[in-house]
Structures are given as C-alpha cells and as structure tokens.
Length: 195
Image 1 (cartoon, rainbow, N blue to C red):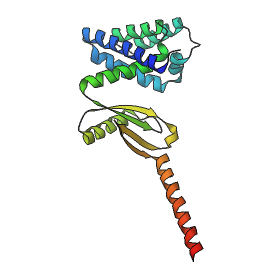
Image 2 (cartoon, rainbow, N blue to C red):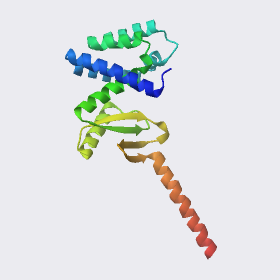
Image 3 (tube, rainbow, N blue to C red):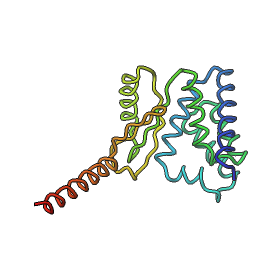
C-alpha cells in the first residue's frame, strides 16, 4: 500500500500524462468534463465507489466495469482508454486522487486560487458554483473549490484560503456559546458570593 507521499507522486504522474495526451489530441476540455461527471457519479453511487475502493474486486472485473461505465457515459476515447489503463495497473482506488490532481493542475495553469471548503454535507453543483462565484468576487481572482464533507462541523462552512481560515461552522458557534455561557455563569457565581 502506498503512503500519502507516494500516492501524491502517483496522482501527479497519471494526471500529467492524461493532460499531455489530451492536449496533444486537442480534447482537454472533453476530458476535464468527463472527469467532472465521473467524480459526481462516484459521489452519487455506492456501487461505483465500492467498485473503485474495494480490494476484493479483481483487476479484470474492475477494468471491464469502469470501461463499460465510461463507454455508456459517452466519455471521450482518451478518457475511456485512460480509465482502462488505471484499472489494468491496479490503481483504480487512486482514481479520486488522480481526478483531483488533474483539476489542481488545470486550475494552476489558469491561475485560479484553490480554496479548501469543509461542509457538513455534500454540495450540489449549483451550490458549489454559487460559492465559487461569491469567493471569486471576494478574492478578486478565479477560484477553484476543493470541497470536503466533514459531518463533525454539524452545519455551516469552513473556508481556507492560503493561511486564512473563516470558520462559520455550527460546531464553532456552539463552542463560542459554551465558552461565553461558561464565563457568564462564573461571573454570576462570584457576584452572588460578593453580595
């Protein structure tokens, strides 16, 4: 099993190879669109997530399944071939990371600022687009959102841009309330004791 550092290198190698090939064939936009659709499909389908993640699935069945899905979704030929190669190499469990690496590389080329966002539940495409637009306007640059579902925040959102973090989560608000109620309770006790 690869460590996270090794995985990052693998993600980048696959991502760069796909981007170079897609540019050469002049289908980069199609490939990017395919990967966006595939990412949404993985998020929406437990069966597809199991196919990708489970070590119980053999390479042959993973390859057949992912290429059939790509064909049915009418992905570009390069995308279909790429997914087949990833599966044949036994790297399908790294697919989410590879997709993120492709998106990050393309965003970097466009000069977009990557913004890490934590939400309690998955955002719809419309919500993500609205947030990207709002953040782009606030920052003054194109924004690429790296969204992650973190149920422990209970609700709200945590936005991190570089070293700046805005924590507008329900969890944080409850912590602040607990602290302020705790100090208020102590003040009341000491006032009563003084009287």
